[in-house]
Amino acid sequence: MIVFPLHDKNGLLFSHLQKITPDLKKIFEKVFVSITPLTLELQKGSVEKLSKDTLFELIYNPPGTQVGDHFLAGFKTVSEKSNQNQLIHLCTVDRLAYILETEHKEEFLDDISWAEKQNRPVLFQRSAKAWSTHPQNYYALESASTRVGEILFRKTLDFTWCHLVIKAEELKQILPKFQMHDLTIFAEAVLFLRDKLLTKKVDWLAWEDPFIFNKDSKKYKEERENDPEENEKRLSYVIPTIKLLLQHR
Image 1 (tube, helix red, strand yellow):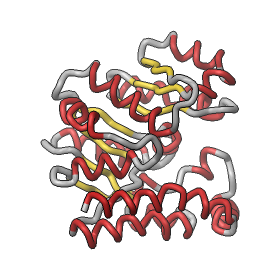
Image 2 (cartoon, rainbow, N blue to C red):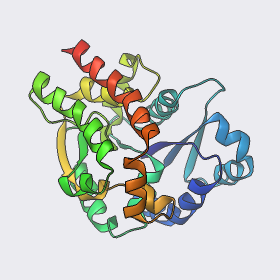
Image 3 (cartoon, helix red, strand yellow):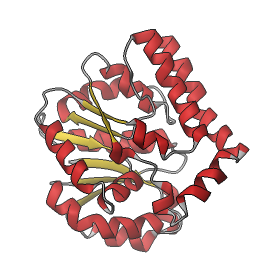
């Protein structure tokens, strides 16, 4: 099982999702997609087409919900509709498309096969090579929360993670504990599971945006590094994440 939200105003992610659907059918029994209100409004035809494919189960989020709510709605549905020992992959569709459409596919398949053999939740974390592809401001700010976690909990954990594998029963157990509605739900999940988590650093969590948006990676990276709005965007969830870590300590 795999679950992710879908926020797609212009249909770009729908086109990538269509490309990777044959692979998804080979890898996963069911794909749960949490549709954001704006996506349903602007991409109604694509949503209807997706709903007709039995591989996908769609979750519709009401107006006024936040990004964290969209993730949690998917988590709730997939945990309820899976048997307790079923492994569930929590991720994002843009990362998944990038992985399956590029040279990272085989390594990804090997790693998720490894994860299935573990008896603990597995948090895949960005390797040094993967981080080197990201803009420096992304790394500087997101790794700040990791450093705070190292000091507080003596573990190296990515609190702004991209891929988590967990049994349905364990996911169902932590769902009532979530209190946030924004991207800090990622940190909450790690905090709830930190004594159980296995971690593995992987190259396939490289920066996906240049591929998704068909941009020159070097130029796009420099553009993001020199954009003050990008700094504000990252700070908007990194600062609350660090505050959350301090509260849990």
